[in-house]
Each structure stands twice: as structure tokens, then as C-alpha cells.
Length: 170
Image (cartoon, rainbow, N blue to C red; front, top):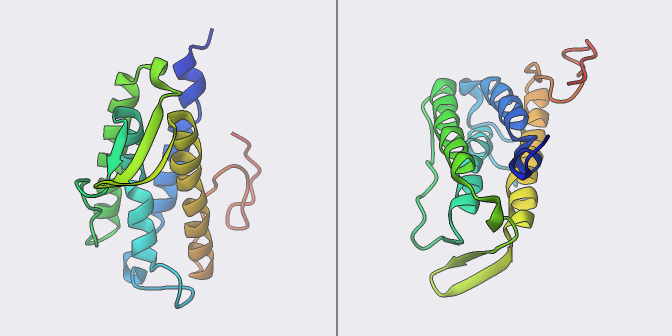
């Protein structure tokens, strides 16, 4: 029998594992590459994805994210190993937040602000699903496109890819 936590976080470990596979494919020698002048660099996008578990952990552990006092995202990493270490650290903190999370607070209001300026206040359930988990998946898809444009093998996320035509549905 599933618990409410099982339902809430049922996809999380799979999405973290897929995200780690995609981050592992990021070539450090292409960190500065951008597909377009308005796009993030490969490194900036990858670092953003690697640190999104922070947002998830904050969403679960805190009622307010205040950008005026929140820790800053690293500007750079030395190589792909450092990128993975960053992700693993942040994913570990997220797992701790999940373990400590009381589902009774799932629908509580969560606020994003900077000092006294409130940007939004929405139910935690919405923030976690849309701004956190879906946000990571969205940017992971962008990163997969970057990898394709760089002619790097794109890891399988949900099913087969052109680089890995074996049909696997898991």
C-alpha cells in the first residue's frame, strides 16, 4: 500500500538518476559553448540543473525562499566530475529533506521573495511539481538538445533515442 510520501515522491529517484546520466555526458571541453547568443552556455545550463535539487529541498524544508539570504549557485565547475559531485551533493540534501518531510505540509503556502518584495506565494505541492521537478526535467531536455547539437551521445531518458535505438520503457 502506497503512502502519501510514496505518491508525492514516486518519480523523484528515477528523475534524479536520469538527470545524473545526462549531466555525466556533458563534455568539459565544451563548457563555454552556446547554441545561440541568447542561450545559456553548456556549463551554466548544466550547473543550473545540478543545483535544482537545492530548490526542491528548500521547497520541502522551508516555507519561504528569500533570495536576499539564499546561498548562491556556483558560477563554474572545473570539469564533469566536479559537476557530478555538485549534483550528488545537492541530490543528497534533497533526499534528506524528503526523509524529514511531513506530508501534512504538502498544501501549505510556500513563498518566494527577496527581502520584503514577495514574488509569489503558492501551495508547496504546486511549487514542488511545477517549479522544481518539472523545471529540472525541462532544462534537462534543453541540455539533451545541446548534447545532440554537439554530436554527443544523448542518454536515454524515457525510451529509445537516435543514439540508443534499443527500445527500453522504464
